[in-house]
Image (tube, rainbow, N blue to C red; front, side, top):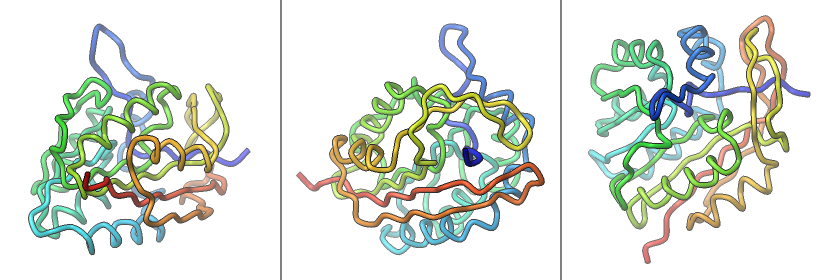
Length: 225
């Protein structure tokens, strides 16, 4: 089975004493995660797709913002207003230091208020993989609704048909749930989004314990109606 790439959190601290196991994983990884995934040309191409379509000064939510690089840094550097949310206090601290022009919160996105139409764009780069399938489905629906009509949502994941899989990521134990590629596409379409561009690629993180893993990028738009 390929290695599992998980972007900066997505399941977070908070709410009735619950704590996601992602907290320990990404607190421990810190800036090593950024170094391992810095060479992803598909991620950079995805950001370029988004940047080419955003109006000046757009409001963007970055779910699972990690160290702030490359996503929040690219968006804020282009003059957009970025809110990054992440499970890991360590990641949030690094991001706030590295990308001071953006705002970062240690927040449980599953419990975070997401008002209808409140963002011009939402980024969800590898932020769902430690949620169960019901949580992923509900969150994608809520994030799609939080995008203004005509706005954009970019989602990237590891498209594998696995549920509660116990694996190892960069030397640390993780429990991962995901969907096969066609099911991820169905998920975003059922949330009211149109897929305008899709890219599938294989990527090997720059880490001695990493293996090649499939990555799927979906570039979506919410309908105007």
